[in-house]
Length: 181
Image (cartoon, rainbow, N blue to C red; front, side, top):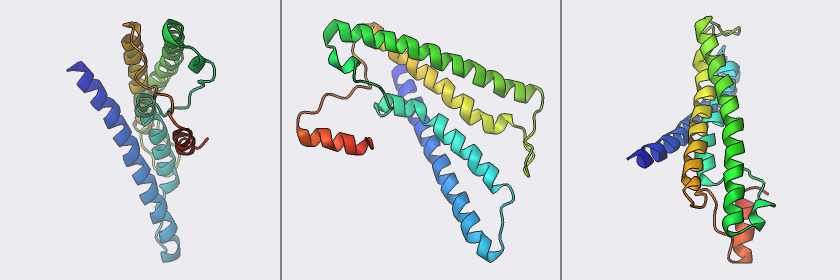
């Protein structure tokens, strides 16, 4: 039951990131098409910037779990068996530490914005904690994903986000093209 909840949380996070991408597109089209027609969205640039931040951070957990996050595998991919498992555990411990650190301060920043009633300084005066929720919320979900993966790997299993090595040269080329390498 917990596994289903977490997988759905990561998927929901990815869908929310996608919705913010759609919002960016709609706002940019309205701004572009509205100029010649004399139609303007006064806070359009601010809204787009907030949507971009929410997209970037809400998409992290889904990207991590899908195995699409940029990782440096040149060293770790050379190891097999128990040595590889130890490197995976060490990598996840370091990842949990760094992501947890950033998450803590992101949540504290959002909480301080709420506590001090920090308002946006642009055209649209809204409380800053509202657009900061995408940033801090995405990092919270990413931290959960790292901790989830750590506990999965610590039980002796290999990481879930690793893809099996390519079997053919064509498969390797296809993966490189998909990852924009």
